[in-house]
Amino acid sequence: MNLVQLGLKNVLDKPLSSLLSVLLFGFGVSIIVSILLVGSFLKSEVTKNAQGIDLVVGAKGSPLQIILANIFHIDFPTGNISLGDADDLVKNRLVASAIPLSLGDSYQGYRIVGTTKQYPLLYQASLEEGEWFDEDMTATIGASIAKELNIKLGDELESAHGLAEGGEGHEDHPFRVVGIMNTTGSAIDQLILVSVASVWEVHSEHKEHEHEDDSSHNMVNLEKLGLMVSLEQLENEDITSLLIRYRSPMAAVQLPRIVNGTSNLQAASPPYETARLFNIIGVGVDVVTILGVIIVVLSATSVFIALFNSLKERKYELAIMRSMGASRRKIVILIISEGILLTIIGTIFGFGLAHLGFAVLSSSLEQIQAERTFFVGEEVYVVLGSLVIGILASVVPALLTYKSDISETLSKA
Amino acid sequence: MLYIEKLKHTYGKTVISYPDWNVDRGDHAIIVGNSGCGKTTLLHLIAGLMTPTSGELFIEGKNLAKLSRSGLDRFRGENIGIVFQRPHLVRSLTVVENLILAQQLGRRKKNQAKINQILGTLEIEALKKRKVYQLSQGQAQRVSIGRAVVNEPKLLLADEPTASLDDQNCERVIKLLRSQAEVSEATLIVATHDQRVKNEFVNSLSL
Image (cartoon, rainbow over all chains, first blue to last red; front, side, top):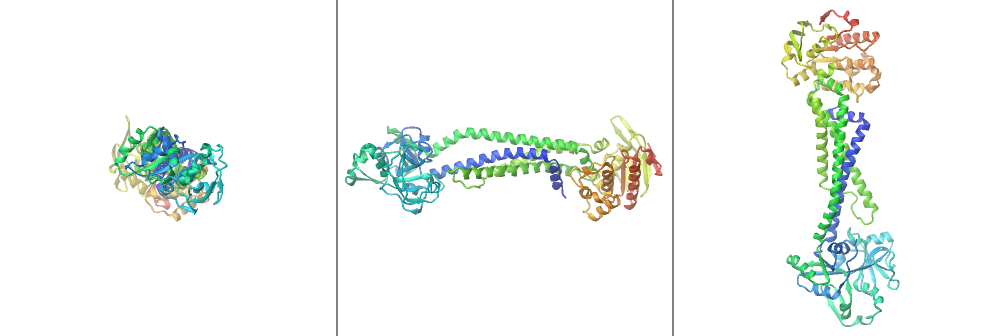
């Protein structure tokens, strides 16, 4: 039986007061660890979804909204831009490549995205089965949708207007599912990909089939966009946004200016806007972090009080241990080990709680494709911090016993 | 074994002077006097729990007044066993664990056979796995005697060991102290104001 074992027995001898200290400390730690986990999860989500995209161009409006709508697919688009404007822009030599996106329809709440095959390639999405969508009302769907809605190849999806469930239907123009993608862990898992032309076709009924017969002649190849369109389409059709890749770093300076100088277009830089978003969320995160720190400090106080009280009761016991040959140093080590044991158990409890909570959360929320268990580097500092707090909380009681006169204590016994 | 000369201790303005006293090895001696006359103080001085203001205090030829604090802790742990008025066992431990702790603090190897033998002679072997708060006052006092003798000290000190005990237990405790001291060939010194105990000892120091 060494001092630490004796410390553990002393801690267990006061189950209720130890439990209180452990619970408080655990909750404080779990709040801080949760913030670390969620923060690092969000950052990895952002980098995963914004990879390979230097600039998003949409209709005039909030750049943050453009990013949220076109990269993360969680907000509504700012509006449409004309294909002509988009084509003019991508002809600029600063643009290396551009992917057109056409949003606006959905199927049972999942977004239908009119785009080109470059878009799934951007996220390294591959086919689980079937093939890629083509011009003719076919769709390739994300892994999550296939699983969630139990869709198989050959199924027909009747799209609805709008991005929310229960929009006006496009019953005459169903999409046929020809392919299902592998899970990528990015937003694309939640999307139904179709060609831009298919989106136009769905909506062409509203325009009373005005160019129904023109589709076979006067075709123009918009090379950088990867689209083949008729002159009429080039003039009349819209898309929602462009995901642009710069040709050179110079473009980062010049292109946004050129875009914003065009009356209908708005440029949004993913890193800048997500940084802005984190700044906005950051205030809330700071408040919660402060709350976690306050709880940890409170629990440190409770560890301090628990030790202090138990030392008052154990004054004679400790004095007698001294009389049996225990040095002051040993008594100090015993008391500090009790404090550290309480905080270590609390820390383990807190870590368990935070990671368990995160695992439950990520398995219950469909939008999250996080690994259920992962550890963040900063958690090491939480462990170290907990140890320091355990030592701090027990140092004062330990020093008080260090200073106490055993002879005086024993003669009052 | 024990020799004190011109020993003085000062509490604030009160000065207690002790008469010179000699206790031979293996002797059973007693310090008697009323409460507040300095019995416990003398016992604490002998135990090295405090250092005297002046004078000499030799145990086994070693001058305790000259030892450092940690030196005193060590000397005490290795050579002296103390029985206090109240047992004050370590609450979170069982009877056996309390004795094991005493062995460790006295820098001895864990010796289960020795512990069993002591518990046997104290007739508390059946209680060895009990937590100490489950013991009666008399049982706890016997455990504390066991704790004091488990390291076979050269000097066994007892401070008012019988104060809170009835006649029967009083006699029993004194018998146990004497027999345990004999078994480990220890010198026994008892400090008491208890009239019941006085007549049992030859070498007596009155304060």
